[in-house]
Image (cartoon, rainbow, N blue to C red):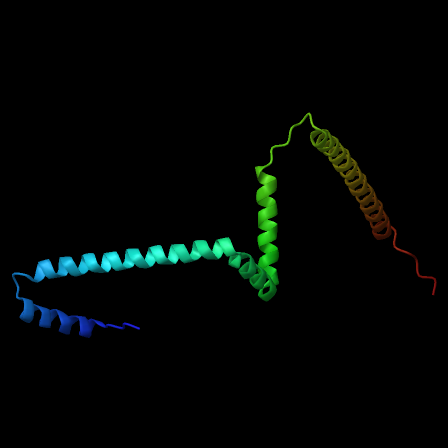
Length: 150
């Protein structure tokens, strides 16, 4: 639309210096700056009014639906993030039914972990015992090699 490079701005500055003069140039630039600021403010107001109108008419819901259709993975991840945000904002009361279930589950988890630790310790003990028996057999075979009958 309005594409000005550094060279064009330099030419405009030189022409303004010649036409307006060095004495009135700061006043001109100040007035131009105010005008540009007012134009940006009006554009911002217009843009926010259009966004509010779009929000009220439901365009954002349609946009979310289109985004979900075009990128289902992102919409699924957004759903997961929303769900975790909802769960993290909840405070569980330990006296409530959920708190009681949580305590029961924690106790069951401790029991399962203890049973798994016992089973692992017993398995390691059996493996150590088997290794010891094999080592004794190898030692016995080294001390008493089999006799050749041929």
